[in-house]
Amino acid sequence: MNSSTKGAILYSSRYGATRQYAEWLAEELKWPLLKAESITTQDLASYDTLLIGSSVYIGKLLVKSWLKSHEPALRNKDLLFFIVCGTPASERQQQETIARTNILNNLLRKGNVFFLPGRLTIRNLSWKHRFLLKMGARMLKDPAKKAAMLKDIDEVRKEHLAPILQHITAPIEVI
Image: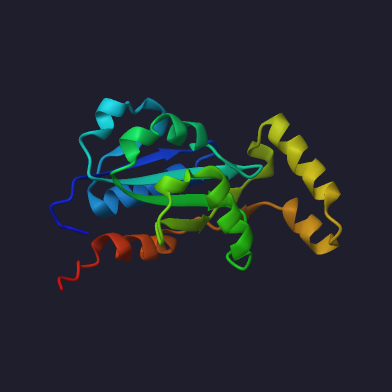
C-alpha cells in the first residue's frame, strides 16, 4: 500500500476481543479507531483504506448489515477485513463460508480477509448467547468438539496481527 494512504480502522465488537485487536492495529498503524456503528457515509469519504473488524456470532458478522447499508461508499475503497472467531485455521473452508455469506461479493477480493482467533469467557456471555452455545454443543456428535465448545478460551494475541500489518506495510511493486 502507498505510504500516503489515508486509512482508518472500523470495528464492531460485543465482548471485547475484536476491540482489542482494533486497538492494537490503531496503535501500530497510527490510524484512527472508529466504531462501525457510529460511522456515516460522509465519514467514509475521508479514507482511502479501511480495515474493518468484526466478531462472528452464530455464523453472522456483527458488521454484516452495516456493510450492506454502506456498500456504495465502500465499493471503491481499499478494504481489508479481520474476522475474529472461534473457528480454527484448520477449518479453512468454514472460515471461507463465513466470509462469503457475510461480506458482499463486490467487497470481497483475493487476500483481503484475515481470520483471527478470539476469546470466549462463558460467564461473560449474555443469557441468550450462553443458551445458544449450549444448544449448539448438544447438536455436535463429536464429544471432543462438544467439550471444547463449552470451555473458556483466550487466544487473543498481538502477534496474530503480523500478516495484516505485513500486508498493509508491504511496498508496492512497480513494473
